[in-house]
Length: 468
Ligand SMILES: Cc1ncc(COP(=O)(O)O)c(C=O)c1O
Ligand SMILES: N[C@@H](CCOP(=O)(O)O)C(=O)O
Image 1 (cartoon, protein in one colour):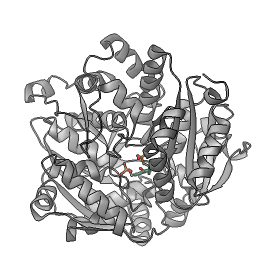
Image 2: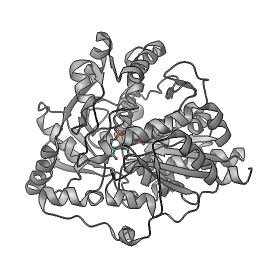
Image 3: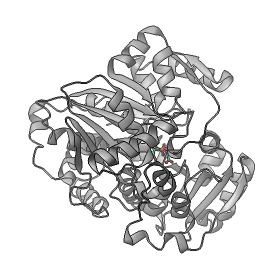
C-alpha cells in the first residue's frame, strides 16, 4: 500500500514512512493510494470477534505487509491492554435507535487513546528497526496532548513536545500534560489558541531544513495512522448493530475532522454507513460550510467543549481531496485561499458530493448544558460536554429507522466544572488518576513564535544534544 499527498507534490510513501512523516513535505496530508474494500461476506465474518481481532483485520491492508502479522498483532494487543474495559470501546444504549460508543476507557479518558496507544507502538517499532530517533511535535486543544504524552512517555527513541493553548484547556487536561516526570516529555503552553498551536506545528514541518535536522514526526490526526486506528471502532460498533446487513449512522463531535473522517474511510471500505453527522459547538465553521459552501474562518470562541474550539479543521482537506475526485490542484487552490484570505468556496458539484454523505448541526453552550441535564434526568447517563454536543445535534435530526451511534469522545470527569454547572453532579476521576490534581506541574510558557519554539526544541531534544 502506498500513500499519496492531498497536494500532489510530495513523494509517494510506504506505510512506515508515512507514519514517521506525519505531514507530507508539500504541506498536504497522506491518504492511501486506493481504499481497501471488504465484501459483505468479509465484514459478516468479523461478527463475534474481539476488538483486537477486528482491529487486526481492518489495519492489515493499510500496513501493506511492512509489519509482519504476528508483530502487528502483538502491538495491537499491547495497545488495547491499556484500556480498562474488556470490550475496549463498549456501546451503550441511550434510547430507541440511539447509542453512545464509549471511546474513553483508555489511560487519559478520551478517544485519542484509541489511536495514540497504537501509534506510539508502531512508531517505536519502525524506529527500532531503523535504529533511528524522532522528535515529535504535536498541537492540542486538550486531549491529544495528554494521550500523546501518556503513550510516548519514557520511550527512548522519541522526544515529544506538546503545544497547548495557555489557559484554554480544562485543569484535568492540563495536568495530564504537565505532570509527567519522563525526561523525553515537554509540555509547552503557547500564548494563543489551538489554531495558533496547530499553525506552528505545520510551520515546523514545512521548514524542511528544521524538519530534517530534528527528524520531526507528528502525532496529530494529520498522521494517517491516527485515522487508520480510529476506523476500527466504526466497524466494531456497526457490527454489533447488525452490519453489514443493516446500515448504521454516526453523529460525531467534531473539531479537526479526524474522527469523522475515519467514519468516511470505513464507508469507503465497504461498511454500510448511512449518514455521518458533524456535530460542532459554537465554533461551527463546518456546519456553516455545509450549509453555504463557503469555508470562512471566524474568531475562535471559548466554549464548555474546549477540545472542539477550532476553526482550521485540518482533516477537512482529506475530504476535499476525495470530493474533488482526488484533484490535488483543487485542494492547493482551496488551501491557498484559506491562507491568504481565511476563506474558500467549494465548487457546487463537490459540495453536493459532501452533502450526499454528511449532515451537520451545532450545539451552543446552552444546548450542551441542557442536554447534559436532560440526558441525566431521562436515562441516568452522564455525558461529557463534547459528547453532549453530538447528542443534541442527533436529537434535532430527522428521525430514521437506522440506528444512530453517537461517538462518546471523553469521560465527563475531564470536564467536572462544566458538567457540575449543567446538572449539579461533579464527576470524580477514576482511582488511577486520583493523584493528578496534587502532582507537581512542569511546563514552559512560550509566545506563538516559530523561532523561539525551534530554539526550545533544539535545546531540549536529547538526540540533538547527544549528536545521535
Ligand atoms: C473530547 C473530544 N471530542 C471531540 C473532538 C473532535 O475530534 P476531531 O478533532 O477528530 O474532529 C476532540 C478533539 O479532537 C476531543 O478531544
Ligand atoms: N481536539 C484535539 C485537537 C487536535 O486534534 P488531532 O486529532 O488532530 O490531534 C485535541 O484534543 O487536542
